[in-house]
Length: 500
Image (tube, rainbow, N blue to C red; front, side, top):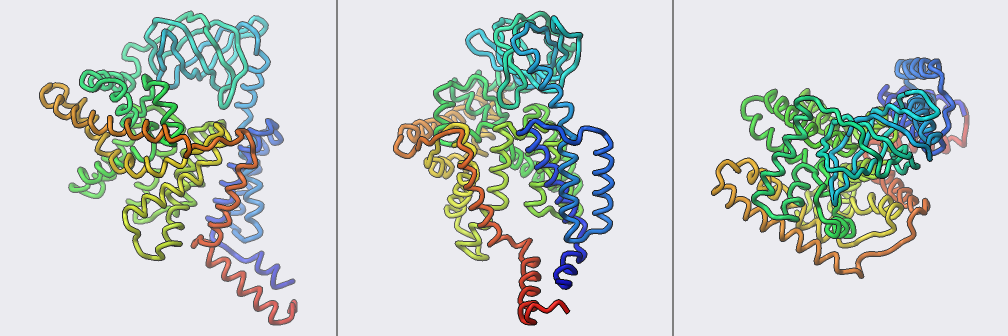
């Protein structure tokens, strides 16, 4: 027993306690969002948790990992104080007529005389309440002919309805009282809108909207039937600007600026990431992708690197601390599931089937697609009740040609000042994009490969238990620790369980 206790009290690297606290923050936020209960709402809890983590980092031992985890959970619980307060305020006002002023935080989607958008930075005026600010977001659908833009401040009057997902409330058909816009407006949003108009001058709809979805994540204008088919085939992620898009841009920037110097390659890549995020907007998936790319570049510049699992935990912690309700956002969930599949599951599958050898291109694509499907399937089934086996086929063709489609769409808009050149490039872009649409529609008709399952059943997440078991068998980072523990157990048994 003494030997076992000495093992538990053995020293470890401080990073173990640090990442244990990060895991605690994540779990604390998730549990608080699900239960809606604040147990550590006083600021003294935050100070105490930070002091405990500081102690754990300076006296890192195996047993203290649990203490660091609990301290992180306290921080996660405390972080939800303003968000849950805002939600409770809005829930109290459901069914009442309110006047609210807020900022349009995403690109408004205008269709059939109606405009939908997300409203944040809320200031509420209710008949029974004084003007007050509230954390949270509202989903708004307003009938208006006014051209709204991202970053506009609008004042609305209407009856507040209950929210859903990450939205604390909804407003359907409210009265648009006022619109405030800075003289310049959101420059980056206007750049995206102006560029989209240039592309649409040369490429017809819906092909142009698919190309713009690839390039800048613009989903407004994409026909409902095509959106539904993309979802059924399991290819919705290709029209959400995220890690794949930034990976392509960063690769191009490093080739272009890296010829000058290593620092030029880093600076050029970071500037391109920043500009792309400002143009696309701070969506959950885009924020995750930007953090992953920036951190990997900066750490790689000094000759170090994150292990994939630690990078995943660190970025998840940062994004949830920035916006805790992201854990309810489907885009955030799918983004991290795909990230987990690409960096952790897929390499383990390749090692299982090919050992230390590099697999052929086709096999690599199949294994990557399999890993992505396995990690995203429980989330999709829980939310939509469907799963498609056709994403394997779609991924094999669409993902390898995605960079070329993005490049052709970009060149179409960039060369619009030379109509003859833009006309040639646009025909190539339209041909490739039309091929994608044909393939998606063709696969969408194969209903025998699309399975309907009950939605909203939490038991589907037991699939992750199988994935965790798989990782425990093939996870290298923990192998040395398991070997030490196994050696200790064998030695202890060889001595007949003696405590001496």
